[in-house]
Length: 118
Image 1 (tube, rainbow, N blue to C red):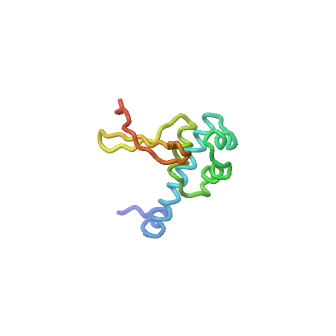
Image 2: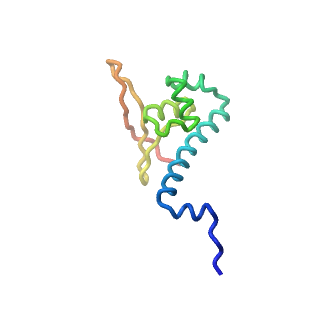
Image 3: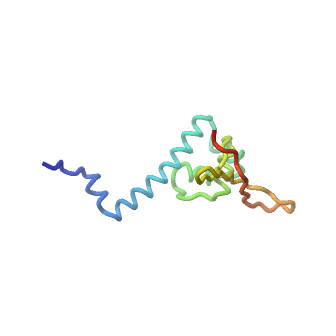
């Protein structure tokens, strides 16, 4: 005899519901990660904004999940403020993303070879 589906399992059969759920879950994951790191490092929104050179409202919106995407440059700034690097990895190749400033004060993304993971 088959076990009846739960309400959640029935809802997940709907492609529209499943897509909305998965998108909401991704948003939750980033905001939860950010909250966890901020609490673990005892960093306030104001201090993170100052350290990362990003507005307090951007930090708050990311933290609350109100902002559902993030500029790569802001991700790099936030990661660096917490002592992290942003790494792209494919197989054994590792590339590190950095925001650099040119001589005429223009900012752009750079990609540099990163050390292999141990």
